[in-house]
Image 1 (cartoon, rainbow, N blue to C red):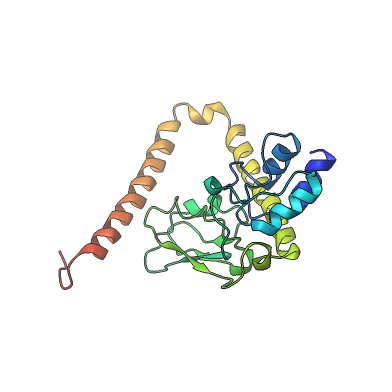
Image 2: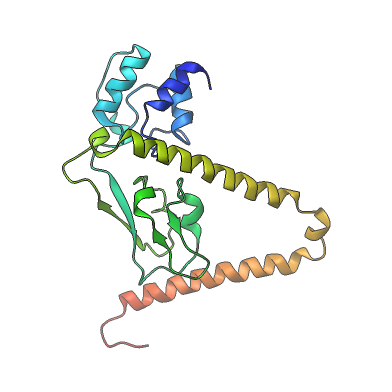
Length: 215
């Protein structure tokens, strides 16, 4: 990352929400520095964020692009413990590791670590994650702070390192382990996936069943 991109990245809220169209805030910052992206693509930064980027880049300020979302209060993810099946899919999706839990056990959100990125919502197979307004009446940088941005940035770095290590471990496994013995491992993974889906469907059926219907 060059100096301009670093300055731009420092001015971004570090929610890592991807709404700008890039995989993370650093990617968006580099795209702006390279002239590939404009400065009006960050909803969490809002109007004030655009002004900050305009001052850094020398580009004219402009309204937030409609295609990227709207400026609003910071959101907080909340997991409904009655419906969570412990599938763990949201753990890797959360860019700041704000969700904790283990397989087949209820997960929970560590509120101070949640950036409201919403990335956990689409991966939940039972729709047990919702968003609550964390900063009523405050939007953009009025709903966020430099300290929170710095903490989110540090946690994202740890998250990326964890996923990289996980991927490296998977790639480093000897091919021999994936030969004759691979079938049981695949069968076990498929069984776990089926169990998650069946549990999700069972909970969905229970939710939709008429009162008193125990079939």
